[in-house]
Length: 508
Image (cartoon, rainbow, N blue to C red; front, side, top):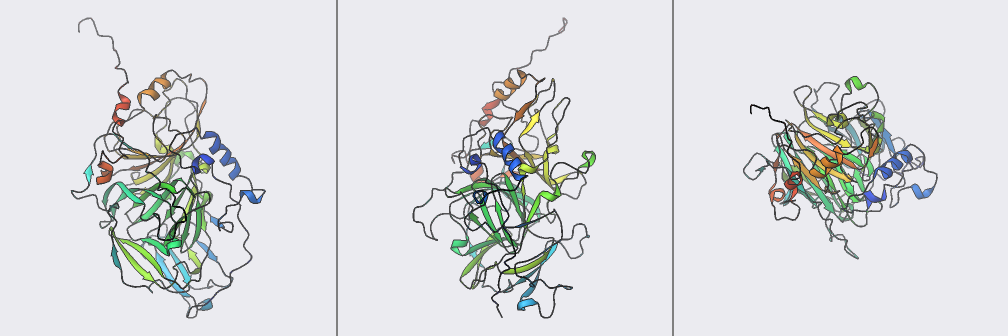
């Protein structure tokens, strides 16, 4: 039967510095955030000295474990984790042992992922799956409803729903209902491809007794405005703008506004349909250090609640949504061990590499995480960040070069300015599909050719890119030029580029 467990009192709070004010404001106006990000990085390397630096709203007791891909074990109550075996006949406190698989049982050890959960009720205790409509969510891009995109495309930020005074649980828009699909490839049913979503919401899920589970793939979440409190079966993560989080396939979780997010939240989501999972990129000749260090990835410690009340988990299966009712909270895991678990990473900790002689490095040098494909060296998709950094290449055109790529590039802007475009707003996004020409706009070009390249310069802001080998198609909403999101004037940003004048030979 169910047991009421006493929590361990031995845990001590983990201080967490506040996010930059510009990243938390939700403003769609670009600002120079290089100082904010640099200050934030320095604060991450020291311990907060006062209670003012601690998160509020019930997050002051969050603790994390570090190390990408480690096999973790954690318990919210002393003695809740079985020793010496995974599924004993009599687990501690009469808990239920349940395995959550992230790979096939026979996958090689290097890629085999699974976690054992010890919970108050098995997750199988729920009602029938009842269909739920979500017309803005797309999970198949191989049919006629998905639109081929050949132009250079850009979209304005998704408006954040206005706060509702004296709102109740039924009011407002939560994270699931606030999702909007922009582009993708393949389908969830085929387990090939991806989907890119935006989100904007103003109401938490837990106050509604709601959670979400995605059987279609992993979710990489990029907050842009407003901190997120992710409550998962395996514990809680506070994710502020400038950080990212990954929630693996089938993990049940809820998203709520975090501290200082009273004005609502906005951001991006990359959903990957394939069986492979995210991993730090191989560093090759860079060596053992640099880029995204394994120690900087943070994982939740066990946390649970013993609540017997109506709860609904919305499950996404082959692109369709279903609601399944329970009589108890799904966040009832008192202990767990394994390597299949959600995590977060702070982009301010990324050790950026750059050229110190001439020319512009390829954007792959800024890869944070990669999702491998069956072909070595060609990822299914990369997550790339462009953090504040020094540019010091001499006699070089320093902005990103003009380019036609064999990969599709979907970009977003978390904060500040992107160094290749004027008018790219935080919260906005752009798509340059496979083979589509792109590059710095006219204003950036003219500024770059007049720059003194014998003097180093600091570029600010935090932009990112989802780069995929798969050509992307648009959702109907993303392709709608009258939606208010579609930037119909984007293609004009190159009109001011002058035509080169090459001297002709005398006989021509």
